[in-house]
Image 1 (cartoon, rainbow, N blue to C red):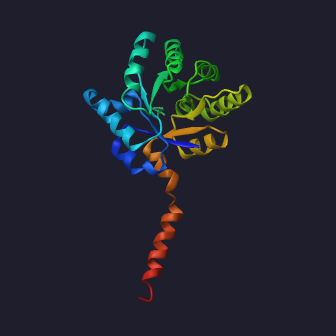
Image 2: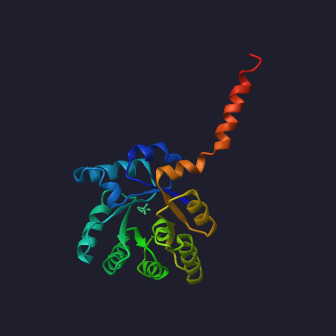
Image 3: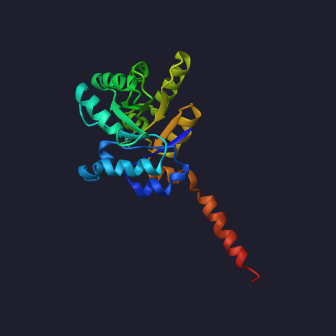
Length: 212
Ligand code: E4P
């Protein structure tokens, strides 16, 4: 499974680059940086990470999304244009896909949206597990359903499990066969941290001092 970091913070990306297959940003994470610095920040991220770096359009209308997507894709070869699962977003996905521009269909909350994203040639579709859970649904179940549908239907679009709130989201999305997962730095940290590892190291350090 591909591991993506869900952040626009370059220092975090550099810190974890050895584990990372890609990066996802969104207008909220980008808003922590000045708009005039967005292009150079994306360029820097794309230098550190050779895999897909998702950058979301802020336009809402089809024509504007296509223009913005083309502009974003020129920042670097590994930029993946993020578009919402709306009528305009799906249409823009189709247009950009035909031009060979990689896309990530975001804000996916149903299998029907995911199927349409696949029909429009999306490279990735991002079901939002955490936001579904927050609204009384089961986010992992949606990821599982989309993986199964894509398998049965032979869709090439990759399922990118997103809106990760905890370690279980990472493990469960791997178990149900998601191609990729994107998580914030604090969850990636939990992937390698374990209190028994820390405790074990402390004991080994203490023991190694004995009889010195
Ligand atoms: C994914 O690409 C999104 O940027 C992200 O996972 C959204 O997560 P949130 O629901 O925690 O904002």
